Every structure is written in structure tokens, then in C-alpha cells.
Length: 328
Ligand SMILES: NC(=O)c1ccc[n+]([C@@H]2O[C@H](COP(=O)([O-])OP(=O)(O)OC[C@H]3O[C@@H](n4cnc5c(N)ncnc54)[C@H](O)[C@@H]3O)[C@@H](O)[C@H]2O)c1
Image (cartoon, rainbow, N blue to C red; front, side, top):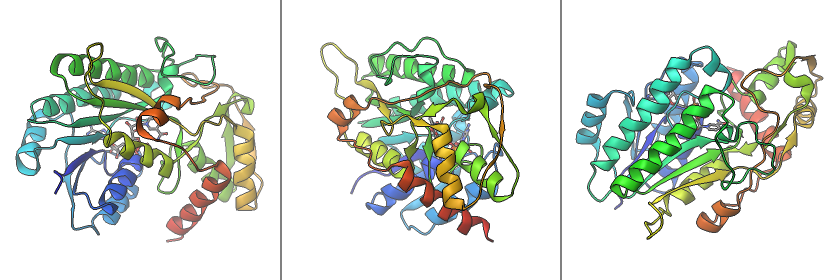
């Protein structure tokens, strides 16, 4: 029997789906989350309710920046030799209005999780969430993990890049196996209310104006949640090894490898909803980037990750969930 996997941010969008997949393959999972109110807390609670159906799942309301609480968690439910660390203050735009919460959760929180792992005997692997936003305004496409990433466009991106550097130092110092995953715009059922697909679907359904930034001149590599989770779990199962040249740390892209036009994305939502969007074009928002596009060559070579879901398949699945969930 494997040790339980700790999933931080388990009430969040990606954390919930990751915990669910791990439970479905027979793992024991301990999920933690501080259930903050950055968006509707009842959506987080409803996700947890789905996980509660599994005997092998336990949830602890815990803030990752609380060192004493984390030590108690390890003593009561651990030790954890495999950790999927997804808790963070997410969202590029919000980092312009509440910068302190990003440093607290994404930097101090990341340190606390790493400290717990490094004091764990026979520790196997810490997989943590980075972000495509670390590529900043890079214009060479697609984004490769070999590219330089020193020019973040937002504090959010800067905290995620900091996590990668902090992790590199801990793997170097303590031989701790770690992988940072740069996720590219994740969407799907149980998705986040602050993200494009949710905002567009809600506004079109309610007949409200749909804000579209940079006059729609944006491209995103939209990645379906099931592809993301398959990447997270394949990565968890293949920890990096220490070599003569390298500490056991690596950073990988998890994207869909297609850079989609935002206006095509909106057209697909309109089609599925059977309703036109009342678009209000706006200027580019500060902190945002114009295009993202993932090169996943290394991820595929090292973990076998292959994304399979197109936006044509994924958008209808989100809309079906949205309609069902909000009919109540
Ligand atoms: N969704 C995306 O498109 C995307 C893209 C790139 C990177 N990411 C990263 O992936 C991870 C998961 O993102 P998500 O979309 O599921 O976001 P989410 O906001 O739905 O999930 C994050 C969860 O972490 C929890 N949390 C925040 N601060 C915490 C703290 N201090 N202690 C304990 N829990 C805390 C929140 O309550 C939330 O439930 C994040 O690290 C995010 O930055 C997401």
C-alpha cells in the first residue's frame, strides 16, 4: 500500500480534479485548503463534497503559510512522501490589486511546503504548480522550457518564477526530487469563476455585456482539465533523478500545444449556447500577455504526457456542467 498523497489546494479547480483522479486509481489522498473567498466558497465546498464520497479521502482546513499547522498536519496525517502542491493565490489580474496575498501564499506557502518535504524521511517527489505566465512577453513561439524567463509581466508571474528558483535551490541543497509544472490556461467542468470560459458563459447566458480585452487580439493555449490532470499524475509517477550535472529538479510545460484565437473560442461558446455574445471590446489589461503556446516535447519525452482534448470537445463539456450546476 502506498503512502497517502498530499494535495494542497484540494478544494480548488485543479486540486479537486487531481485528488479525484488519484482516488479513482485507488490512492489515499489527504487534501488541504484554506477555503479563502477569492471566489465563491460554495463552489469549493461542493467540490470537496464530491471527494468526500471516497473512503480514502480526508480533508483538513489548513493554510500552507501556517508552519505550526503544517507540522501538526504531517504528525497527524503524514508523513507525506509524495506531494502535489497546487494551493496558491491564482489569477494574473488580481495580483495588481492584492499583491501581498501572492507573496504570502505563493512564496511563503511554497517555502513552508518545501520545508515540510525536506524533513520527511525517504521523500519521493514534490510536484508543484508553476504557470505559463513565467514566459512573460516572450515572442518566440511556442514557449519552450529552454527559453529565458526573466521578464515577468505581473507579480503573479514573478511569484511563480520565484517558486521555480526556490525549488531549484532546495533540490540542489537537499537532493529533494521536485518538478514544477507550467500550466497553460486550464478550463473544464468545476472551473474557476474568474477565468475566461466561465466569465463568457455566464455573461452570454445572462444576456450581459462580454468584456473582451485587447480588442480580441489574443491567443491562448487552452488546456482541458483532464489533460492537465493526466500530466500531473504522470509527472508524480516519474520523479527526476539526481545526476552528476543536475539536482533532481526540472520544470515542464503542460499545455495543449495549440494557440487558439480568442474570438474563435468565443464563437464556439456562442454556438454551444445558441446565443450571440454582446461583446464590449476593451484595451489590453496591464499584466496580461498577448499570446501563449506550449511546446511539450520534454514533458512527453520524460513522462509520456500527450494532450488529447480540443476546445471543440472541451467547451461543450464545460457548458454542460455549468448548466447542470447552476440550474439549482
Ligand atoms: N487554472 C489555470 O489556468 C492555471 C494556470 C497556471 C497555473 N495555475 C496554478 O495551478 C494551481 C491551481 O490553480 P487553480 O486554477 O486550481 O486555482 P484555485 O484558486 O481554484 O485553487 C487554488 C486553491 O488553493 C487554495 N489556497 C490559496 N491560498 C492558500 C493558502 N495560503 N493555504 C491553503 N490553501 C490556499 C484556494 O482556496 C484554492 O481552493 C495554482 O498554483 C495556480 O497558480 C493555474
